[in-house]
View 1 (tube, helix red, strand yellow):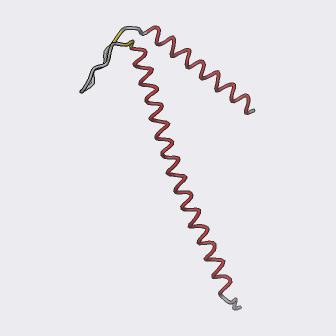
View 2 (tube, rainbow, N blue to C red):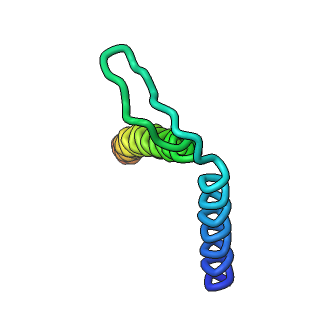
View 3 (cartoon, one colour):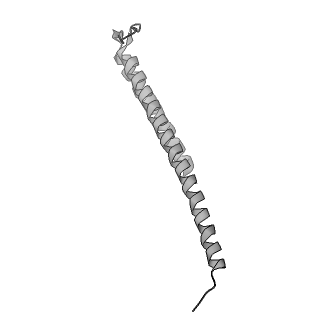
Length: 100
């Protein structure tokens, strides 16, 4: 099953690359982007759109990574608190004599 998933992912990535290539080849009109401080050289519209998509994907991956790290740190902290609470509970059970 894992092998099938890998093959499926590879096929999807190859299809995406093919679609991006076709899109880029069909949008060759040169455009220069003008930012506040500088202007880029003229490149095809397809290239700019693909670069914007890749930049957005990278930002998304970075944000997901940061959220994952934050959750991991929180989980580790809560696990330590739980361990301490369990130890204190066991300690109090052992110290308190049972009265019926």
